[in-house]
Image (cartoon, rainbow, N blue to C red; front, top):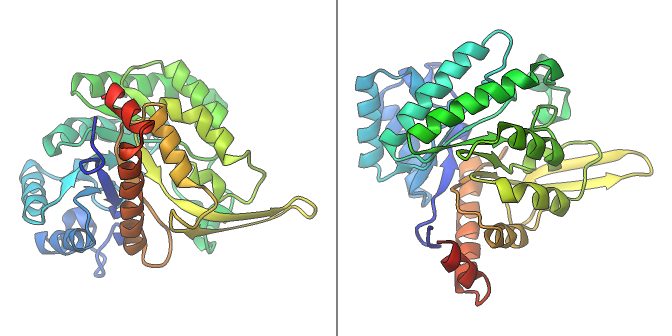
Length: 318
């Protein structure tokens, strides 16, 4: 069990994008470029990152380049607590088998970096309409085919076996219109996988931002938190007018959005949550907001650790 001071709270590297300003894929970029991105995270106070394959797909690196990246991380004083796959579904009709191979490769790579989690999900590439929208979640995206659900369960269980053999865990990211597209669907899918090394990533920010009817966030968290082993954490404003069917949402720092994360994180700890956090944010100075969010989470964890109620709970679960 982590202490409040040692709990891994990573920054997602997604904000840097998958290419340099010259258009070079990050996995082919120079060590100097990697160092510049990582140093910005360290200067903001992060000691952990999630490289995410949307920034640096580690599975594409040769053994020699993996060693280079390890050295750059060490030189910049950073560690990896999780590795996330983004929009590379293992049941993609065209790329599913290749994505499955990539997931296996990341499960092999993760322990080399000390990462305890590989995060994946069933979201797929943005549609042209999503790429044109101000916020991609305002346009219609991919919908999972119910006929592929048995294959999805089979492949996630396969990855769970591999993760267990390597001493790490697999986390499933909740995302709209996929097999993890509601709290109930995520819990049901997790139950069907039924693997001790597979948990849920309760990334309910992905739902709260949607311009559609949505259950109360407290209700959704209560269902999924008992199964959570990793957490992409972000917040949004949310307004809705049922009389006219109007909705609005905007990315916000954790402290100011509609989800009361002080309440939700404390509830997660009550339920035994002990996984890493990974801060995300869209728009504005994403990594700067993530740094503020990291400090906010750390304060909540410290407060919980000092609580006569939660502190005892954490000690018992540890």
